[in-house]
Length: 86
Image (cartoon, rainbow, N blue to C red; front, side, top):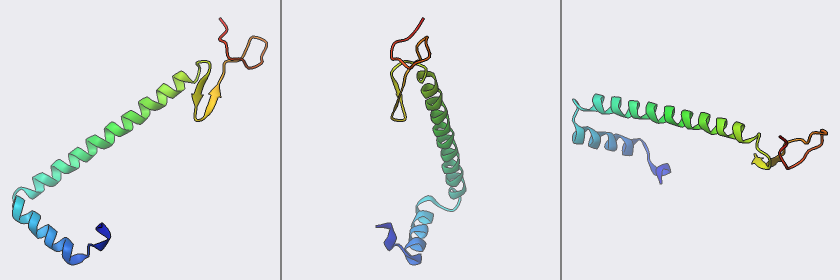
């Protein structure tokens, strides 16, 4: 749908936005959109960091699946096992 837009369509769209919001409010609107995008980007980065920490903590648990592979705690004799050793 957006592939059909050409230069004239964008120019008309810009004129309609200018008429709706007025020239005085456009800089404030652009600043608000920029701040919102910055906050969204920061929140996404924070969520990725928290998700990575959770995966690292859970990787030590026996039988935990991480990236399609089951992580098992080794037995006391050095072989892999599924039961935790105390």
